Image 1 (tube, rainbow, N blue to C red):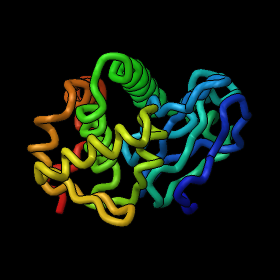
Image 2 (tube, rainbow, N blue to C red):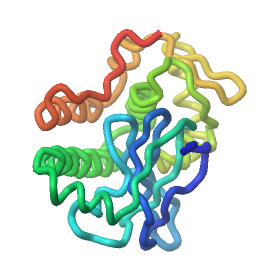
Image 3 (cartoon, one colour):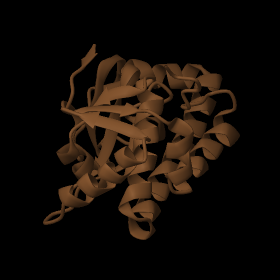
Length: 214
């Protein structure tokens, strides 16, 4: 099935009909509270799954799943997926490890928002997006970046200008291009490396890092 940019796969509190495995593109997991801006707390690409609460036997989705990078996904109805979990021990073990990694990503994101400045956070977010886009270029607006990072648009604009001035990125007409990945990693906050290390420890050869992307 197609993943259309800015489409919502499921909203918080809803009972989804499917779980989703992105094969191209990526999905933001967004937390909302009444009277406050929404905030991205997690991201899912080809390394993961949308609907992990189903693995735990929970029906309602805890977060809104918003398509951040257009692409495609495989989807499986809930009942057959639960049947596969019951009959395949290896699948259940991998999903349990992935849930552990995703929970740590969520906790890292909240800590990042609280303690790190906008520019390093933006660098981390761009690296995470590039990893899941499997490309140096992807579509994104400053308004969307501000929404995802829980920051003012003016702050995102200033941070993006600094990264562009240093030759790390190019941003034109909603198209983001990562020009210098090592440089972007150098200015990113420590949360990005922590995420990668967590994936490596818990999922072994499963990796979201897009090495040598052209």
